[in-house]
Structures are given as C-alpha cells and as structure tokens.
Length: 303
Length: 213
Image (cartoon, rainbow over all chains, first blue to last red; front, side, top):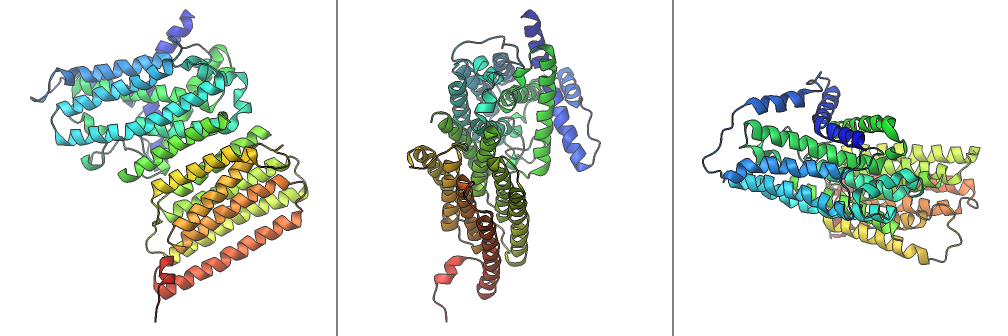
C-alpha cells in the first residue's frame, strides 16, 4: 500500500514533462527534424525556476497565487485517479465531481489571473478558454455517468478499475465511443491541435497561451509544469478507458501503464502532425461531437 | 466476435458524426471511404467463418467503397469545384444535433421493431437506421451536387448494414449485384456533376430549379 502510494506520487510528480518531450519528438520525426531532447520540458521548467519574476504594475496578489493554486488543484486531481491496478491514494463515493471541478477551479484561477493583468488580449484568451471549457464539461460528465453505470461504482477509482473485470469485452461499443469522446476532451483541455496550438505566438488565434503572456520566471514555470501535469492526469483517465491495463496486476502492470502513457503521447503527436488546426468557429462543433459521442455511450449502456 | 463487431459498429456511428460535422468536401469523402473499410470489416465479422464468397464480397466492397468511388469523387472534386467547402443549407451544428437525435431515436426505437432475431450484435439495427438517417440528412441539407452524392453513399451504407442481418439468406449474387449498381450509379452521378458544372459553372443544385432561357 505504502509502496504503491509512493510510486503513484513519484510518477505523478516526475513523469508529466516527459510526455511533452515525447509529443514534440513525434512531431519532429514527422517533420523530418531531430527535435529537442526528450527531457527538454524538464530543462525549461528548471531554467524558468531560476529566473526572476517581472510583475506588471496593474497586477494584484491573485496573479502571483493563481499558478500555484492551479498546480495544486491539478495535483489533487492526480491523486484521485488510480494508476494501473493499484488503488488511487484518495478515493470516496462521488469523487468524480470533485475531479471535474478541480480542473474547473484551476481554470478559474488561470482565467482570473489573465483578467487581473488588465490586458484586453488576455481577457479575450480567458473568454475563449472558458467558452470552450463549458462544452467539455457535459462530455466529461456523460463519460463519468456511463462509467459509473458500467461499473456500479460512484468513486473514480472503482469506475476506472472496472475494466479489469472483463467489462471491456462485453461492452466494447460504448467504451469505444467514450474513448473517442474523452480523447477530444483531452485535446481541448490540454490546448493541443486541432483545438489550440501550444506553439503559436499569434495572439489572435491563441487560446490558452494568450492567458499566460504576462507570466514570467517561476510563475511561468509553474504554469508549464501544470499544463504537463494536466495532460498526464487526463491521459491516465483515457488510458483506463481505452485499454484494460489494470488486468495485469502488480509492478509489471505499473511499468506497462507508464509505457501506455508514452504510447498515448505518441498518438497525440501523430494527430497533431496530421491535422490542421480548426477554425475557432468550428471548435464548438468538435466539442459538441464529443458530448454526443459520450452521450451515445450512456444511451447504449442505459438501454 | 460480437465485441469486435460492436466496436466496429460504434466506429461507424462516430464516422457518421464526422461526415455531418466536416466543413470540407474532401474530409467528407475521406469519412465515407473510412466507412467503406468499416463496412467491409463488419461484413467479415458478421459472417464469422470466411468462405470464398464472403472473402470476395469483402474485398470487392472495400475496393469499391473505400478506394474506387472515393478516387472518382476526389477527381471530380479536383476538376469541377473551385470552392471546396460543403455549404450546407442547414448549419453544421443543427445537422450534427439532428443526426444525434435520429441516432438516439434509432437506439431507443429499434428494440420495439418486430424483427426476427438479433443474434448478431444488438447494435446492428440501430446503427443501420441511424446511418440511413444521417445519409438522408446529408442528402437533403447540402446544396452541392457532390455532397449530395456523398449523402447517397452514406444512405446506401446504412442499407448495406441492414442487409447484413440477412447474411444467411442473402445470396452472394444479390449483394454483388447491389455493389455493381452502386458503382454504376456513382459513375453516372459524377457525369451529371460534370454537366451541371459546365452548364451553370457551379455545383449548386438550387440553380436547377431556376427558370432559364
């Protein structure tokens, strides 16, 4: 028990930047470049942590607190999901609501800090982020409803580990629909292509990046690390739905799970390399499709 | 086997959503091609054992629906369409929601249909009804002739899935004949598209109902 909690914390804290490295390496391979090192995201965070903070005169204390609050909320969410066949460190009935709104809390702080700068660009970014986020929420809740229907459990831990009992083989169709829906939610929440481009620096088309323009030094480092952590937590969620990973018990399963996360990052990299970014106006269509996909899954299960 | 079949059917439903929500004609053609591959795989999975007839039918339908017809349509698109957007008369979001509504109704209502047996994945009937409905929505709410052809293809795919319920009784020749009919139909339709384009220098079918000297 203690060993598994320690392993969970270790993976949760140290693995996320690696996923960014894998995505960027995959994209570089598609473009025929060597690309940055797999560990570039670690170096970036470490570099930012050593820099000094430049604060705009209009900002208040909220601006300084927000990145840490967002990171704390995401870390907390990371403790609610189980890794491989080990139980989640924290688990109680109904914790999926907490999980969904911890991300909501993080988003609130990021958006509030963006508004705090008083820059119209950042306000626009905050409006876009929140405007798309409300469309991902129904998809997430339909997904949780379906999973809880499938497993008969109300805690995230029970829901996600239900796939180990052969449920995957009996209920393939709804799980395929759920995986597709959650994948779109992951792309939207982590501001990846086709919803948002993490590398763009054209303010008019940015969504997430525009909100963090005024952050610098350790604050920006916390935000970058938080983004990686968010990708990690949502990837864990998706991996549980996509594959019955939890059926292999113990430490081999744990290692396999980590490999699965890297595989998922490669898939994200491939999607990013093959797709163009959607027009901003078409993003809601994609997100509504993800709601419908998760909704169908619920419909199929409740028949 | 049923789990493979039902995951393929779920993928079919997802492709329906893609076809309804895509704004570029090329993307819709690609979605229809993917649907062709899925149909071939569903046929193979539904038959269970692979006899010679089944293999010929699967290869034939994949070659036709996933390769030949998309290639013909892509060529037609390159030659005639200057604007490659879909231009629906009903927006993407409403048509997506309408598609979802019909799918939900198909799932909810198919249980009450007096059909003999649903030994093959219970999802097959709702999926075929939903695909027919999506094809119908594409057929009626798109303005360009080429998108209407795509709607017709999706409609036909839905009927094909329904035909799978009769796998034991459906003779090989009938299915092969249907595929041939489909091919000839698409061939004729692309010729018509060329003619519409030459006459009006646009693919907008609303022009067909206007009076002209």
